[in-house]
Length: 307
Image (cartoon, rainbow, N blue to C red):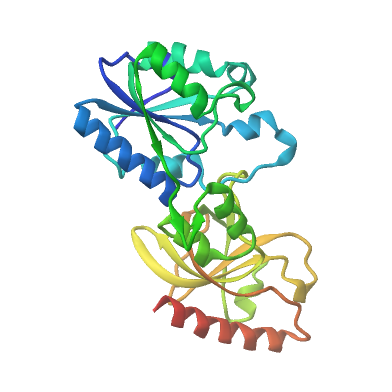
């Protein structure tokens, strides 16, 4: 997959099958679109092109909303690489670019710069200034610029269509199992291990305090989770707490993971954590002994889930 930093760095193709969007999470609904892109490319002997944007348009247009994303751009890139896509256009998104009309986007970018012959698009996709572009507009543009439209219907699970917003909502509610079902893989975070207050070690459950790489990354609802930890090409079982440690009257949100059967100094190291299942909500215990007892139960529950 060739990565192009914007339309200006792209050399026009003779025949291109294109899809365009933000693809936050690269979930199973996106997988359906990307597989269609590849299959159409093969059947028409065309090169496949995925056009996406950075930063996410909503972050630029609505900064006060504090949109949290399922994946960072680097995480999405790793998922794109699993498909046999020929070209990825990573277009910088700013307010100036947001003022481009749907006609200008199709004509001046996808048609003139990419070489659009086939457009693969989700059933509800909108594009251009103020999201004015729709399938109705596309039919008019397709006649003008002689390209084919391939509308991809939604992917449904239990009669519910998958979308990035539904996955973000599930993560924020702590419904990790549902989010993972919609994603088609385990929701994960990556970060640097930093020194915390050492409370876990005094309880017999030493924890690694995680500082997230990207502040736009969405975090699950506060609570305790069964997790898989990836460090130095090895996978470990563990349990993770997102919260404020109310038993110790802390106020600051922290992410702390207890890695089972692990005794290495990894301060300053980067690790990745996959969320498998939510075990319980965070709560304030009457005593430290009550907390230690609950942690031992949490570990058993985590092992049962992970094994």
